Structures are given as structure tokens and as C-alpha cells.
Length: 387
Image (cartoon, helix red, strand yellow):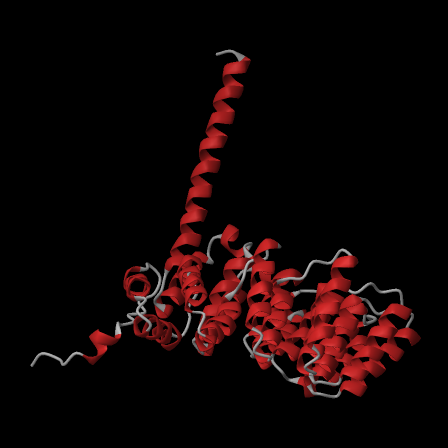
């Protein structure tokens, strides 16, 4: 056999083995992703975790824990995450940080703390990475009272210096406690340590102040951001838009959208929804419709909130044609809306002799492939039942 034939056979064998391994791994992911029964999901997750490649995919861990947390199955979260400790991966800081983060996002801080405390006995080094993960777990679990102890005591014990991420997490914690003045004071402490706040630092503060309706103080934070040569991004502008919206300053909201665009920052769906809702609240039908159309022209995809705000408003304003158009869009985009909202549109269409449109919505509600809404024509709901 020639050398080239030997090479060809070797590469062919390797390729076949790789394809077989990939197929096995893909089937593991599919088995977990597609399982709807949560108890069976736990068992399949634990079984799939035996494969090293499965354990390298953080996304499936996030998805599974999120599903269990949504169903408040915290014991099962503990079951699958504690099961991970039997693998050698637990001696790697990145893997331990994943468990700490997942426990934190599930509101299970004591479990996160336990993973952190056990790291030395598993020959797993604790660095700034795991320290920041534990801080974040405090915040995500809303254990704000634990943040100060972690932040003040652990750095000396671990011989580390908190970094920008650490301080940003502390700012977020103070904002979560509504201790906004304390949150701002963290900026001074950062400066003493030679750290410069970034856009995340300022956005956290802007969201807190503007979100609480403290617009004047939000403006002071905005000025401070500019003095620190930090350029605002879309999140900064959305925080400011929210403050202006809550202050019922519709003109200023529109002006700010113009300012954003002049600086090359395009509004996103959150920005557009605030503008639309501003006009909904002031009962300005034409402007609300115009800004919806502006959203679509900007190739910004409307979300569930867009339709929840606009459809009831259009119905009350008597613009049933546009309300019908948006209801069709809801089905195209597969959004889950309150069935009562759709039923009211069907009723109004039928009561104003738009029978064909009403029938179409009823049909879409019954035949779509993601949720059975089952709206009824008024004549159907009023008909006496057969006995």
C-alpha cells in the first residue's frame, strides 16, 4: 500500500470517528433540550453530564437551570449541580464559577457560597474570577446584605485586589437596596484605588436614578459620565428616556431620540416602545401609529410589549383596521398575549360589521401551531348550549 493510500485511510478513519462523536454529542444535547417533563429532564441531564463534551457546553446548563428555576424546582437544581462535583472539572476554577453563577441566578446563595468555600479542598484556586462570581451571586440572589462582608473580608484573605467588575457589582447591590447615595459614593472609592468607572458603572446608576423618577439626580450622573469621558450607549439613553417618560415629558423624549441618532446611536425596541407609550398615554393616535411605522422602517423588530400597549389603545380609539393588522402580526411573530385582549378585538370587529376580519382572527387563534387561543365570535359565545 502506498504512503498516500495510508494517509487517506488514516484521515478517513479519523473523520468517521469525529463524525460519530459529534453525532453522539448532538444527540445528548437534543435529548436534554427536548425533554418537557422536568423530572425526566433532571435524570437525562445527569446522565448526559457523564460525557466530557456535554460538560463543556455552558449554554445547556444555563437553559436547564433556568427552566427548573422558573418552575421553582430548587431541589432539582441542587440535585443536578451537586452531581457535577464528582467530575474532575470541579478542580478547574472556570467550572466552579459556572456552578456559583448558576446557583446565584437561581436565588440559591448559600449553595453558591458552599461551592466557593469548598474550592480549596478540591485543589481549585480561588482568584479574582471566583471572587467576582460570588459577589454577583449575592446580587442575583438579592442577598444584598451579604455583599459588604464578601467585598470587605475576602480580598485580604485571598490576597487579591477588587477590580472594576467587583466595584460595578457593589454599585449594583447598593442600587438594588435603593441606597443610591451609597452607590454613588462607590465612584469615589474607585477613584482612590486608581480605577476609572466605565459605561456599566454609570448605566447602573442612571437606571436606578431615572427609574426611580429622580431625574435631576440622573442628570447629574449623566454630567459626571461626560466629565469622565465615558460615551453614553443605547442603555444610557434608554435609562434617560425612561426618566423623561415617567416625568411625562413627551417632547423631550422625541428630542432625545433625535440626539441619539445624531450621535450614531439607533433607538432599539425599548426606546421605540417608550415613545409609543408616551403617545398612548397622551391619547395621540396618529403619533403612536407613526412611531410604530417608524420602528418598522428602522428595521427594529417589535416585541410583545409593543403589541400589548398598542392593540388595546387602537381598539379604544376605534382604529379596528390597524388593530386587526397588528393582531395578524402577533400570530406571525408567535407572541403569547392575553386571550382577553384578542377576544375584545374580535368582539369589536364583529360588532362593527367587520365579520370577515373577526372570523380570520378566530381561525388564527384556533389553528396556529404554538398556542390555542380559542377566541369566539359574539354569536358563538351567546348561543345556548345543547343539552
